[in-house]
Image (tube, rainbow, N blue to C red):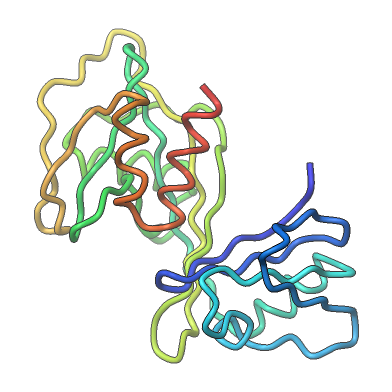
Length: 205
């Protein structure tokens, strides 16, 4: 599989990909070689909806890009029930998935399970395996990069879910189990990286 990094900046997106990646012929592509200057994320994207940078050395490019930002570590859950439905939340006008920042001395797995429990009012889920990592740049002068690790989850055997309770203090107004068809309809109404996560979940079933 071709390696790449996808970063979201508001509604715009930057993809760093290794040399040899096939890109849509309509896309504007910038080629980066070791020794060249790596601009900040906003500079890399400019006014493009989706900017592509093809890199001679992908890890060197990624390391150079990270020097413009400070990492904020978070974790989230891809929780499915016995019927194969995905647990989704609605927050600030968009469909989303439960996630949050790591607390002190907390592992990503612990944080992901805790956030799902707190934001959705469900029993503490069981973490099964890593699913994906997303990157979102924000904050003063676009210096913060939220690095969110996502994990597949389920409820421990014999645990019943019960009623879903949105964590309103986190601006969550709805929590629901969504079928693959319902998730597909949510994707255009989610933030970019969340919509792509939802699509990846559907494809991996």
